[in-house]
Amino acid sequence: MSVHLHWFLPTGGDGRTLVDRHAYTDGGVKRSRIAPVSGVRAPDIDYLTQIAKAAEQLGFEAVLTPTGTWCEDAWLTTVALAQHTERLKFLVAFRPGVISPVLAAQMAATYQRITRGRLLLNVVTGGDSTEQRRFGDHLDHDRRYARTDEFLSVVRGVWSGQPFDFGGEHYQVEGGLTALPPDPLPEIFFGGSSAAAGPVAARHTDVYLTWGEPPEQVKQKIDWIRGLAEKEGRTVRFGIRLHTISRDSSAEAWATANRLLDDLSPETVAAAQEALGRSESVGQQRMLALHGGSRDDLEISPNLWAGVGLVRGGAGTALVGSHSDVADRIEEYHALGVEHFVLSGYPHLEEAYWFGEGVIPDLAARGLLPQTPASPLTRPAVGGAPLLVAGGR
Image 1: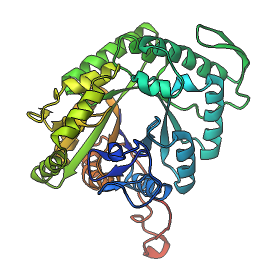
Image 2 (image 1 turned 30 degrees about the vertical axis):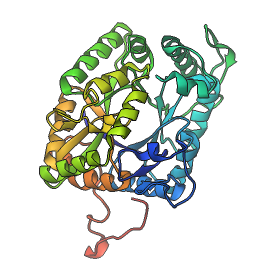
Image 3 (image 1 turned 90 degrees about the horizontal axis):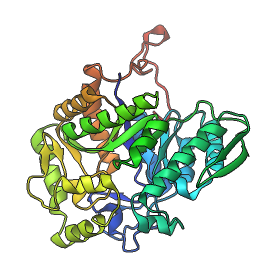
Image 4 (image 1 turned 90 degrees about the vertical axis):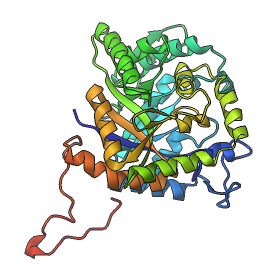
């Protein structure tokens, strides 16, 4: 089992601070290149293209794009970025409650043809009722997961290429059809820590994603989902969502983490914690419990730092240390059964290079990465001269 590395596209804003999109007074996206807050970068297509190209060149397999009212639309943004990259896949996050499952299946099929098979799907059921209501969705937490269960049943049904009927509480489909199914079928990534989420993951997902909890807690989740999947006669693979701060030395990495923490005022942390505390997401509550809103003892496991979660919703932990330290932690999670690592860092362009040039060679030396052909730059050309090629690598 190889390690699959993915990066993150900050379509809600980026910068040299953990506050990122929260620094925007309107909670959204500024179109001007002049950032309203020092160190915050607007997510225009030129900047996102830089990140996508860097991820592709450094050897990341895919990039995750978030979903929500605070960021750019993931489908449209990534299909645009696909025109600027060659091999990079796009892990497109979307909310099943705000789109027809038959339309989503058709969109995925079209996307696969346009990008020549570079789509991965991240199903986000939603753990914040306030955010869901912005989309016109008024279901409660558990009913949202029940709807996701039906949604994925319909999507997989219409991907068969034959007329598909479905009668459920949330969807009634007669003769649903994707005339030209996607080839290959996009892998479905899914996360959820609640009792309502587990059976959905077991029945439908290819890769179950967890946020970056300590290894012993991650193992408990893996055992839980694996057991549910076995009862369904299925095998589920596993992934983890983490930030990274890796440097040439451990001291440099922790100094960077401390600088990010120093940028946060007590008022900023308190306001973020109050807002995050209202989330219905069990995963979010587990993230908050790792630090309890305190700046003390944020290294909750060796090289696992919970400082990000003081102000950021969702993934709230980072791997911090030397490149070798971070590789050690990835190897530790991998030994538990984690195959996919969806990573990010502030700013996302610079941190992609720190990880890509520091940690990836270490992981390759350990034999954890898939074998890839040698670069044209390192192969001898006819006549003995090096072959130089231009391109988006």
